[in-house]
Image (cartoon, rainbow, N blue to C red):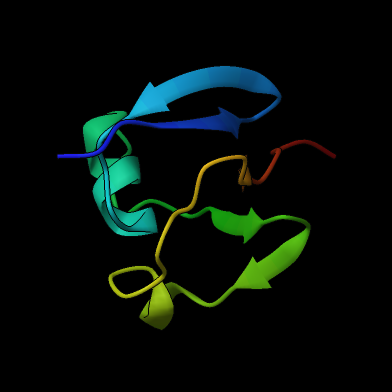
Length: 69
């Protein structure tokens, strides 16, 4: 497997995950929870997570809702 250097929520990360979904699972995200993802500042719909490839240098942001009022 190829190891990629990416950025996850602003922090450098080495990963062997080939797709966005594989990365999320490897990082312990529960896919059923409410959150959104962007790759290089572009929103990626949840249906595309399994097929969204990762490349060296990608910037992945995981955005979670904040409760409050």
